[in-house]
Amino acid sequence: MNLILENNALAIICNNPAIEDRAKALAEQMQLPLLDTPAKYLSEPAQVLVVDETGIALQATGRKAPGPIRVDFTAGGANHRRKFGGGKGQMIAKAVGRKGKFAPHVLDATAGLGGDAFVLACLGCRMSLHERSPVVHQLLADGLERGRAWAALNDPELADILARMQLQQTDSLQHLAAFEDAEDKPDVVYLDPMFPERSKSASVKKEMVAFHSLVGKDPDADGLLELALAAAKYRVVVKRPAKAPFLADAQPSYQLQGKSSRFDIYTIKKMPE
Image (cartoon, rainbow, N blue to C red; front, side):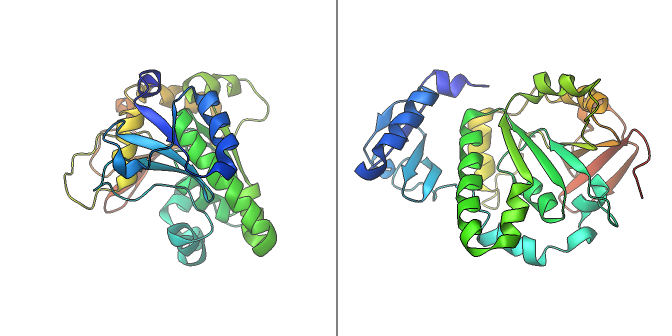
């Protein structure tokens, strides 16, 4: 999974002397080269992590590259969904069992950029986020840090939401086993493993293209389901493309079907009312 990092097919760029120390520390931590050449003037590596005054972003190199990818919980799509997303009526809320006064503790074992976790945190769920990719973890950690700093001054509601999201860099294949006999099992384990993107259209999100090149297709994802079922108290929820096969070829207890994706729910015991 860390092949790209080991081969130095990724670098860190910083053009601001005022934050160069932060960039150097990150480069040393991730064992990546530190460059001062703007990304548009590079032909390789294919992607870089840009450290600037606004935080950390993943940026493709070259003159015609798309814009940077960064995590932002204070504006844009995340902010819109927080305010107008549909509350407990959303399919993801029904999938994890968010109803009435019960807000489950959800362990998101494949956190990615934190989009689904943020939606559930907005609905009152306590979220434990696991992300094994060092690059994706840095993007999400930076987004949480910036979001918390902004919200502390401007938006108490958002501050409470982000406080419910706790991130850990870990491989869930190894970490989930620790919950098997634990007294503090999460109510729900949520899985959204990478799946090969078949569409070649321009509508495919640039985040997915970047993720596929960074972390591959999660070929070991099938192993997560058995571990998740042992770790969860009430259910395991697996998010899949609408026509994708079941994870580990395991038939779910029931499904919630959307237009482009679905939720496969594996029940362990009845959730609190």
